[in-house]
Image (cartoon, rainbow over all chains, first blue to last red; front, side, top):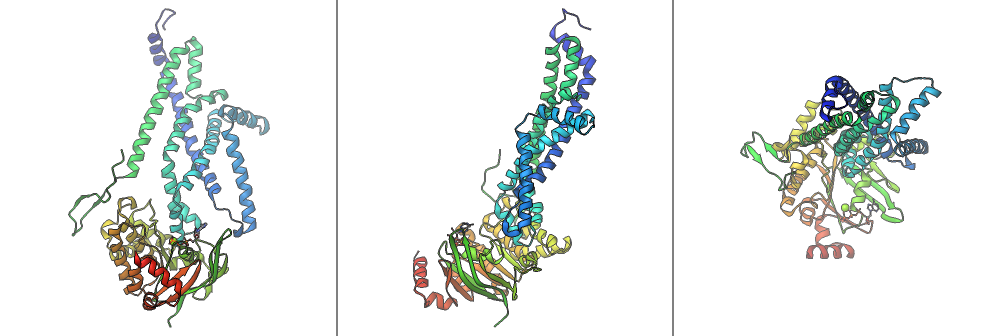
Length: 263
Length: 246
Ligand SMILES: Nc1ncnc2c1ncn2[C@@H]1O[C@H](COP(=O)(O)OP(=O)(O)OP(=O)(O)O)[C@@H](O)[C@H]1O
Ligand SMILES: [Mg+2]
């Protein structure tokens, strides 16, 4: 073990050697909660965004109209509340509220997952709604015009395009969650920040430990950002269309549109 | 007189205070090729959109084989599958290839098997000369190619009548010809068509009947011969003089 005279890097190596496994486990928990929380939040966002983007017309029946208006009001309140309070406060309220009112003590990691999901859901609901509204209305009309129901038009035509458009925002939300799950240490979730705090507190070496911690956070967010960008490009496919096996046109790449390539 | 497919009676439509269609009576019979002409804002698109309920009419009714399409128990989805629509802006599904565009409606609406739907789609993609582009996404196609795929998509539903809303107006001039020639072929194959167009040549040569609209009403409806050589209404004459002058 290094002593009082040891330098910065000696301590850093010491922590990496002794606490490496713990750091990795903490980082694992961070990744687990932020990934599952983002995915669940996305599912919530899809459902809420879908309902909030639904056309609401009195002519389609008064009952439907008022029920929809009411449900929308509730969902709107959910979004406002969770976007207007810090996640660290939401964590306290939900965790201790569940303990006091429902008499359930959630396992810490589960509690973290629930909180991140609900919080992410509030943000993604608005993003999904915006994504749906950004799809050209002509797309939905064409789907309706060949006889699809509203639900089919959304499922097969509008949502796939909306989701493609919001993919960058979704990836961004994931990265934000990796960083923001650190607030879950207030309810003792053993994610990366909590682990770091414990290790640092034992030796009063906050700078050294949190130097390591920031490197780990950076590596996680940076590599995930890059990976998502690569994935987006891959999904879009090539800009040009290659005609295969036609008798009239020689096989090869044919540029059909004089558009410049995306960078 | 052959059987009426779609019929519009006393149809009116307002957007707020703005009355766009007034008491329009109009019908399309099996095998007819009808064109609707008229100046911008006269309500041509709105009439077409009311016919398949993309817009809700404010008054009057639309009948399909004599049945009011807003009757309870009448399936709007099945009606729309029988009455195809081709849009000015093509509106190909951007998330699908040309082939998928022509297959998805057949499978989801008509519940055809994939094999059957693809076979049928290929037949119509070939008919419009797009068989080499089945795997292309809309963004990889030119305007004329997109519109031809959109026509194939509508035809693949095997509709009884096809509505076209200015199918060539969004095209570069050199692509208008390829789409019009596809439409001519369809007309001569006996398809019932209702075409909103500014292509007077098409209206004159291909259509059995030309409808002139102005200010939300049908001013005159007659054979191309009459409309283009000795129209009864002065408004028709003025419009044609203006448009043919250009
Ligand atoms: N959704 C809408 N809301 C309000 N007004 C509308 C709407 N759609 C059309 N209008 C108005 O209705 C009138 C008729 O429009 P419509 O699109 O039917 O004309 P059109 O004959 O198709 O013209 P064009 O040749 O330019 O396509 C126009 O004055 C237009 O501004
Ligand atoms: Mg129009």
